[in-house]
Image (cartoon, rainbow, N blue to C red; front, side):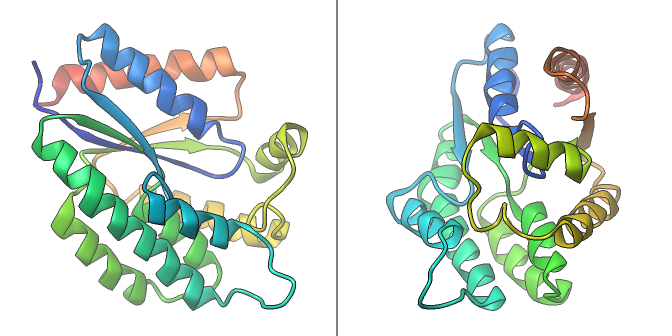
Amino acid sequence: MKKNKFIVVEGMEGAGKTTACQTIKKILLLKMIKNVIIVRQPGSTFISEKIRSLITSEHKKEKLNKYSELLLLYSARFQLLKNVIQPQLKKGNWIISDRHNLSSIAYQGGQGIKNSLIYDLIKITNKFAKPDLTIFFDIKQEIGLNRIILRSKLDRIEKKSSIFFSKVRKNYLKYISLNSKKIIINANLDLKMVNNHLKKKLNNWLKNSQ
C-alpha cells in the first residue's frame, strides 16, 4: 500500500470542490485505500466550525475587517491541523482537504493583504503538515457564480463583487503555476467530463507517487 498523502482541493465558488472530494475518496477506495478522511477549511473541528460561521455570516452591527478575517481563517486552520490533520497523518490515514493555504493567497490576497503576511502564517502551518498534492479546479467566475446562485442562498463571501472574484482567479492561476505538486482540472465542463479528467489525472499521479 502506498504511503498516506495529504491532498488539497482548491477552486473558486461553483467549481465543484465538495463533490470532487467525494470523487477522490471513491478513486482511492478503488485503489484499496480505505483509510481516507475528508475535511473542509475553515471547519471540521468544533471551534473551526464556529469560526467558519462567524466568517461566512453577515453581521449588521459590525463589518469584519480583512485582517481579522485572515487571522480567524488561520485560527481555524491551526485548530484543524493540530487536532485532526497532523495526528491522522501520523496514524497513516489519507487526508482530503477542501481548501488550504492557496485559498488564503487567492482570497485574502485579492483583498489587498500582502503575501508576506500570509506566507508568515503558511510557515507555521507547514510545521504541522504540507500538502503532497494540490488539485485546482479552474472555473470562470461567471460560470461558478451562476452555479452557486442556482444551488443555494449566497453567504457573505459569495456576495462579493465580480471584480473581487476576478482578482481571486488571477491569484489562483498565478500561484498554482508555481506549485510543482499540482493537478489542474477544467471545471467549466459538465460534471461527467470533469470527473473523467479527474480520474485520469489522479490515477496517473497515484501510479507515479511514492
